[in-house]
Structure formats: C-alpha cells, structure tokens
Image (cartoon, rainbow, N blue to C red; front, side, top):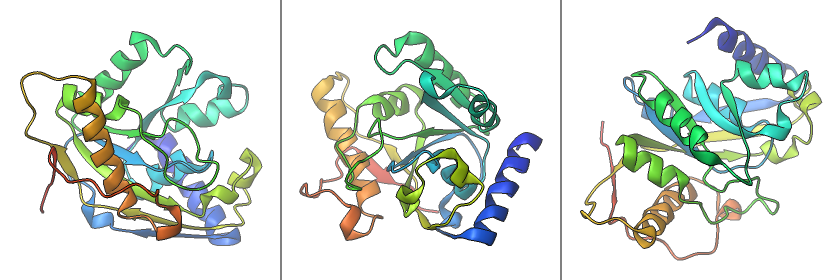
Length: 222
C-alpha cells in the first residue's frame, strides 16, 4: 500500500468521523493474497475512494478523461485512476487494466454499470468486467454501496455529511466456460455478476430483474 494512498484514505476516514458515518461490513471476504477485480454499484463521485477504503488495497480504476482537471487530477492519480475516453475506449485502456492485474497484490475497481445510477437502482451491466476477468482469470469481489448518492461535488470529500454503508460480499470466480465464447455468453455472465452485487444491496437499490441462475460463477469459500 503506497504512502500517498494511506494519506488520502486516512483523510477520508477522518472527515467521515467528524461530519458523517462510514460503516463497512464483510472485510473478512477480501482476498488476503493475489490480485482481484472489485465490482460495485455506482452512485456518486466518491464511490472509488469509498471502495478503496473498504477493500484496503491500492485501487486501480478507469475514470473518464474529463475528470482529470487540476486540482482533481492530483486526487484521482493518488487513488490510482487512469483516464479513459468513454466514447472510444481504445485498446490502450484494456492493456493498462491487464497490466495492473499482473501484479500479485493489485486491486482493480470496475463499476459494471459504466456510469452513475440516476434512480439509485442497479442498472444493467456492461461486459467489460466479464471479459477482463476471463482474459486474466481473476477473482471477482462484489461490493455494494448505499448512501453515497448524497455526495454531489468534490467539496463533500472534506465535509461528507452523509451516512454510507458498504457491504463486501463473498469473492467468486468464473467457471464452466465453453471453448467457444461469444457476446451472448458474456452477457449471461455479466448478468450473474450484477446479480451478485444486487444480492448484497438493500431492496430499494436492487433492480427489478428476475434472479439469475449461477451457471458460470462460483463462490470461493474461505
């Protein structure tokens, strides 16, 4: 864990202790060794910092390039962010992501919804997390965030007048893959990943889709 991340994380926890509350459940589910992908629902700009604090690893994540403006670009880089053009992601972003997962102690953060939910409900997931997890044979860690939607701007990092609860679910991996992979398969697995996030969210934050049968994902028991 880098010193810069420790400083930022300590500052975040301190401001929450003064102005808000931050509850983290399920820390025992975080893999003790090896790299993994954290997947979470997305409600506000403070979510990456909250997920990093909950998981307790130097996070790596992609953020839209428009956010990388002074002075916020400094904060984003401290938290391990890498700029991406969301309209044309390009292969360089994928290469960067895979390079992070080659590190034995790396934690990659992905919000499968692709953007913040406007109605708080978990949205349909994109296939990026699924494809990266398959290509890198990575463990996946589901995380749910509740309450961060009250953060509307970066000033609230300093005065977080909100009550946030983060729940970390059991890690899982992708199994039973056929030799031939296609978009339909990726969509089925993505739906299972989103279901595992939904399962640890309160009812009011869940989507209204039917529960998925876990054919291609399997919980890793400790």
